[in-house]
Structures are given as C-alpha cells and as structure tokens.
Image 1 (cartoon, rainbow, N blue to C red):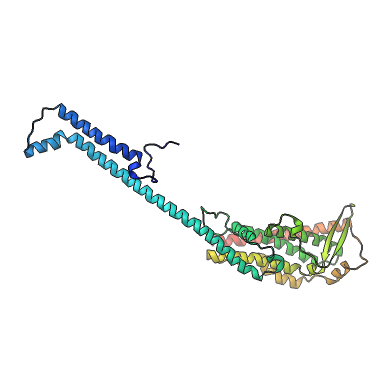
Image 2: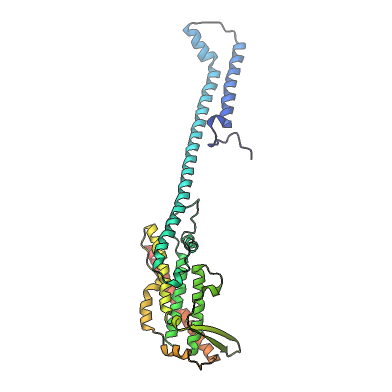
Length: 342
C-alpha cells in the first residue's frame, strides 16, 4: 500500500520523510523564484548604506524571507512530530518486549511453583499432572495472557465450575450413606462415578472416559437389569467405595492449591474451594454402610434387578439432590455478590 506524503513514518530517518523532503525542496525554491521575479521586474540600484540594506532585506526580500521563515517553522514542526513518533514507537517496542518476557517468565514460574505443590498430592492425581496439563491450568487461570498481552489478574471461574461439580457429588454420597437399599445405592453410585469421570476428564484433559476412570484393584462386575428390560453394568471396588469422600477431598485440595497459586502471584486473599470446608463434617455424619458393601461382594449375589418402584425412588432422590444443590449454589452466589459489593 502506497504511503501518503502527509504520513510521518517513525521507522525512517527524518531526511527520508516525504513531507519533510517536499517542504525542504518546494518552499526554498518558491522563495528563490519570488526573489528572482522581484529583482528582474524592479528598477533597483546598488546602495551599500544602511538604508539600502534595510530596503533590500525588509522591503524587496520581504516575501521570499517570509516564505523561508515559514519553511523553517514547518520543518521544525515536522521534526518534532517525527521525534515524538519515534519516542512513542520506542515505548511501544519496550512495552511489547516487557509483555513478551513477563508472559513467559510468569508462566514458567507458575509451572515451577505448581511442580513443587503437586508433590503432596495423591498418586491418582499427581500422575496425571504433566507440564502440559499445568500450562493448561495457567491458560485457564489467565485466559487473556499471551506474548502480546499480560495481566496478573486471575480468572478463577473454571475452578468454581469444578468446585460446583464436587458439591453435587457430595450430595450424592450423602444420599448413598443415608439409604439401606442396595438397589438405590448402586444407582446413585453409578451416577457418582459418571460425574467423577467427567471431572477427571476435565481436570486432566483426558478425552476418553476409560482413561479417566479410577483404577480398580479388587472389583466385581454388577449386571443391572431394569424393569423396562434394558441392561447396564458397573464395576464396584471396596477400596474405591471406602475412599469416596477422600477422593473428593483430594480434588478439592488440588483446586485449592490452584487458587492459592494464583493468590501468590496476584497478592490478594483467596479462600479454599467451597466444597472443601464441609467434607470432614459430612464424612463424619454420613459413614457408608459397610454391611451393604459386604453384601455387594457376596459370591452368590446375582444380577441386580431394578424395579419400576426403584426407578421412581431414585428419580425422587435425584430431584432432592438437585434442589439441595440449587439452594447451595444460590447461597454461594449471594455471598459472592455481597463480597463484590464490599
């Protein structure tokens, strides 16, 4: 694209600026032409006295000198604008370079800090935390940061979304612990595992559900037959059943560490995840019925028959879970809004 004569490019020398060159050529030439015309069309006589000099400079040469004075003024303005543009360009380049360096340094420190933090996490979490995953956490916490844009203000909405998923899982576990009907326990646990698998897929960037499933040591395949003749199955492990609350605590601990890591960079007070504080109390009051676990692993236990009544019961339970979850989220949202107003 051809540049305009009026454009002042800070990337070139002043003498190469088109407007500067045109002004420096045209106006002095115009002044010389005017002087020649005046002299050639006037009956002038040589007068070396001060009267002659004053007449020659301030009367005969008034127009040419005015043109030259105007030329000098315009050239000075062009030079000032060019210098200002160069200064602005230097500032922009320095800012761009600083932003570039700050971004990569900030991300590198984030990865290094998190590599230290993950040492205390359980194996089912830490083994999935590669540098690529940690950089993904950085991108999620600072979604607008890139080599040309940098800010230490973190966006923790993605952590809160996982936190809400964990809250819903705690309500499912609470219902599992409060029922003595094995059919309902299995259906609730099936949903619990589905949600846990979904959370693990999101946290560890695992595309296939099979990759995100908890590895079982000793397990039993339970064949589920529904009242409408449909079928499904579920793998049940004693160790997995007994570690339900502990695993949620592990995920909550990971999310809390991620929040604290952002707090370290931003210098603001961030609290742990909302699910974390209530887990210990919930676990104490909702111990899982171990007799049901033993019954699930009896050698003579056959397929699990889900009646229409069971289906209605579990549907009602899920409605209760949703109502409890919605109330909790509304409560948390109101607390957040109140804190934002303060």
